[in-house]
Length: 413
Image (cartoon, helix red, strand yellow):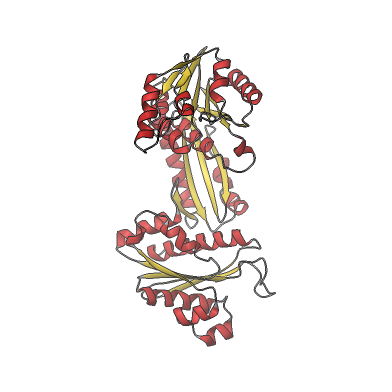
């Protein structure tokens, strides 16, 4: 079964919103063994929506649509679907009760626009919406399925998890699609490709490799397709084992792992704590660490020591060191880490100082020059990086590098 995902909304085409719905839906359809053929984004215009539905009908057996089911005049997906499937709108008492209940719990009254949302196509099976007012609609014609869902992410996800995916999963399937993502850090995409060239060339024909580079991290995604789920898992596990022997120093996680999540897990398991002293990253490391639920168990705090006086007065970085070595140096990064560990009384601490750019670089210390240090009870380790000339990219790469260093420091790698 091939699928097309149709995302409706002018805001997706103007850049006002990122189309996260389509990415998430594609991952869920893969769980049901359904190949996504295309992802289309369409504006809120009747003719464009109709044309897209007609083309999707000719190409795919499953079309999953999000957006345009709200109560306002620019929401026209329901009406276009009525025309496409030659359906008429009828009042659905269950939908009306759901709307009344949803709004009533929030102390809101039902408007005429809300009542209109209870008018649904008579040729559609209705998918109840327990998180909003727009019901989902499932049309079936000539062995093909068209499923229309709200564009609000949490409403859509609840309906996919609770109704759509379970219904698709019980259908007989001809293939399974298995993904495994290997996460690497500390090596560029082209260099990584050279390291694994022989291994990649020897992959089975039923397996594909994709390189997914992001800021400071390269993901290697293995995809296997076939009729036997168990054998696919075994085949991918065997390839990942080979890869682990090939590039052990660069692999730090798998699938949905994050550096901050893995590091937090290690700290929690060992009952250890961490703090940070940040200059060029401006609190990015602390933000990443605290984005993990439960991080209060191991993260004590941070000091954003952007100014040298703050480095000296709050972290105890010696003035002579700042004067002699400069703020961006091994000595200052290590002093910052030791100072944070002392201030917050933590087991570990991170110190980061650098030139984020776009200005401020010199011949000996160009933009992107960064020193990162990690301090523990008995030692301090530090590394020198030159990330590049883009400020935002430098900040993210420095934060990722710091977390990777902390993880290695804790595990003794």
